[in-house]
Amino acid sequence: MRKKYILFDLDGTLTDSSEGITKSVQYALDKLGITENDEAVLKRYIGPPLDESFAKFHGLSREDALKAVNYYRERYKDTGIYENRLFDGIKELLSSLKKEGYITALATCKPEPFALKILEHFNLSKYFTVACGSNLDGTRKYKNEIIEEVFARLNRLEGNGELTEAVLDEMKADSIMVGDRKDDIYGAHNADIEAVGVRFGYAADGELEEAGADYIVNTVFELTALLLMDDDSVLCD
Image 1 (cartoon, rainbow, N blue to C red):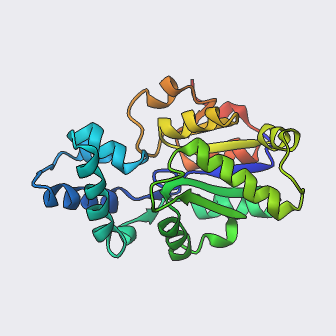
Image 2 (spheres, helix red, strand yellow):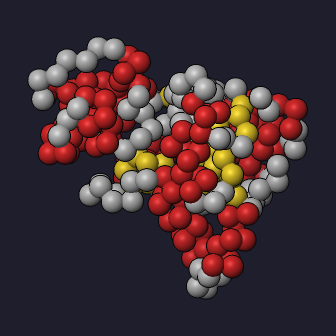
Image 3 (tube, rainbow, N blue to C red):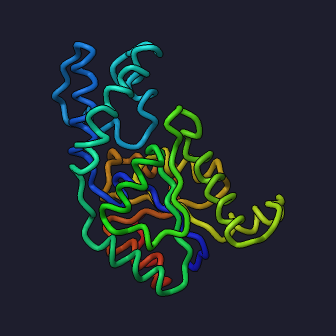
């Protein structure tokens, strides 16, 4: 495992953000007259695009799903965003990757302004060469789109000129995505890069395996070993 570019998801991978997200989902649903207290249902919202989750998990129409996203943001932007904590060992992992010369990037489906605010809050911005999220207008919301944007930004920063197919293929071959949900795995594979699934996030039992994660780890320690120590013995079947 010696990849030059390491892309990280945010929620459930770098931070335990379940409290802020689930409470903001509850707030949005309550605004629409829906009461939801099942934590297992609420945690399904962590990771995928919110508008699709409101439609899928609570049967909202397209119009109401978009209303729910706006209600969610009312609470999340000032309160829910800070109901959040770093997973133990994440800052040390990012610091070690930087010292070893890896190039790290954030690739999250969370709206980019919120993601940048979280990185600043936890003093993580210094570890990331680029940080890319979705757009507030609902565009660039899928993981593979965000990964492609990461490569475009990295290419510009590295001064490689035009991002040709040959250059992009070379970058992708030297990259890996780290995430906790099936969307991270599918998104990585749709962007033609490998993916590490982490079990300390919000994936359901068997979700990462079913999605076809190339590697699966249980803890931040195992993730550190995989990325830094060239030790495949930490991988789980």
